[in-house]
Length: 318
Image 1 (cartoon, rainbow, N blue to C red):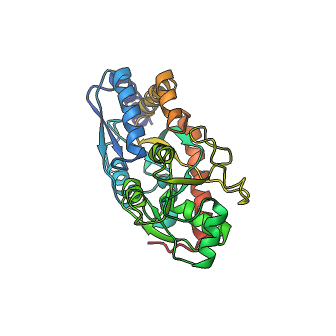
Image 2 (image 1 turned 60 degrees about the vertical axis):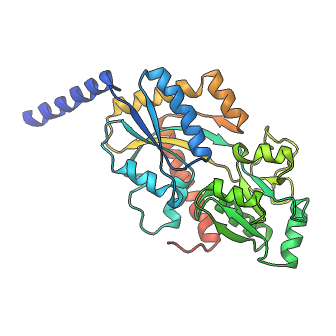
Image 3 (image 1 turned 30 degrees about the horizontal axis):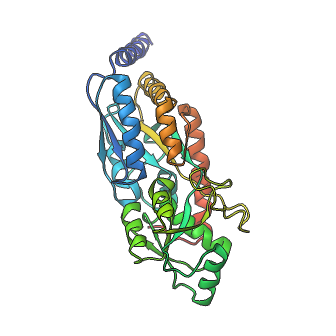
């Protein structure tokens, strides 16, 4: 018994010392996307943390496999707080898409904080598509089922889920074309190689404003402040259509709680800085900064939500 108490005391002292001295070297932010919104948000938060903690926070972009590559790196990292994951909603979708993930989504990670949420995605089409409204798009698909293609950032990505939910609710048969990231899909929409996609404001807003793509609808329940003239799909008759994304920060499981709390407090402080908040809002994001416990409960609900969509769309598990 005394040996057990001594061991527990040793662990507590070690954790306390770790928290007091953390960080003493650069921190690695593994981003699950290259040149996408996740990478952009990650760099913004990393810059703020670098200034606040007086220690370099380095972005390591590891895109591919709908975020699985970068996520696995962090799952297997030393749980000392120096390797963290900045990921998006794909973290919660992948368990329903892939039969065998190389990590346990809830068991191998310690949630730190929900950083920010999007209010939704924009349904955008290339100007050559003869549809100036969602109604027109549905009619086009009805006339030629399966001939309208939509790009996504990959199988299981939120841009894929939005397209499949649209097919379910609108009765369309839009043809899914997965890409290795949102940037590649968006490039092919601009080049008219695919007809449309569901895109975040960070990516598409400048191009909507310049007329290079046309926004027909928005997947959130309220209109975006970035493009307020674009109606929600709920307004347009797809009642209850609600797809939005988010960005969260994780550490490997078994990271000492004092370090988790320190990281959480630091992230929340950065997110709530006026300059950071204003930048996130200009990208169509809502700054959050949750507790680890709140983020953990949120993850469970999101995993259940997208499991239902995957089953309803009959998406085969890989």
